Image (cartoon, rainbow, N blue to C red):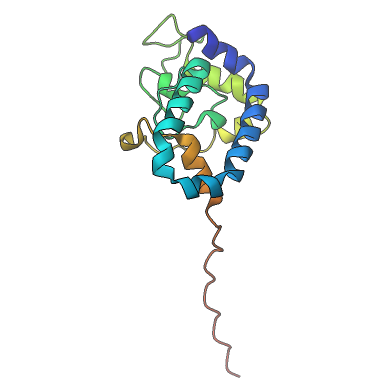
Length: 165
């Protein structure tokens, strides 16, 4: 799995483009998913997602995938499960301080992000802590639901009263 994970980071540009197309297809299927019922789809979709992502990214199925903002290097593979950058214990050779035979997930994330347009900027977004209640759930379905939500315009502040002369 480790060798394939490194391969995926090296091929981040192509895999990222493939995923964007796949995500667009899934988003177009929202009406069908809604008709079938997202809860009914959860188990089969999560099983497919788990298989694909485990092979390509050594995915841990946290349910809150951030691969698109970490150069296709899953931060859950970090022994410390850090989601916002390296711990500071990265060795001079780019390997992990906890598992010296493994490249630091965040060194790989930066390399992968350099291959994706806008990838390095995406790494700057601070990720929320993992909600462990979502573990094992499909992040693909979560993304479709989020994208299908109608965007509500921001509330406008009330107009200031006109000044009296």
